Image 1 (tube, one colour):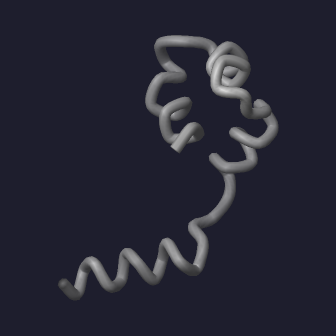
Image 2 (image 1 turned 180 degrees about the horizontal axis):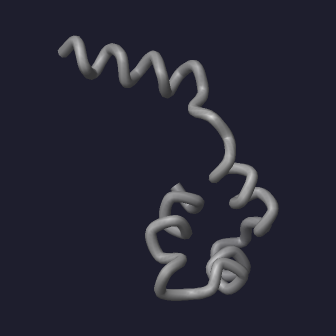
Image 3 (image 1 turned 180 degrees about the vertical axis):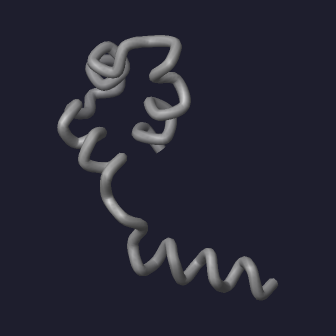
Length: 51
């Protein structure tokens, strides 16, 4: 949830400031941005489309 908040607000505030305020690393945030969706996320998306 912290990374989602940073992604939504990075146009307003610097990523470094947001990461520091939320207690996460900048490298962790950037790794999260570039990571492909997990198997669980893909599964949840497939089930939600069927519902």
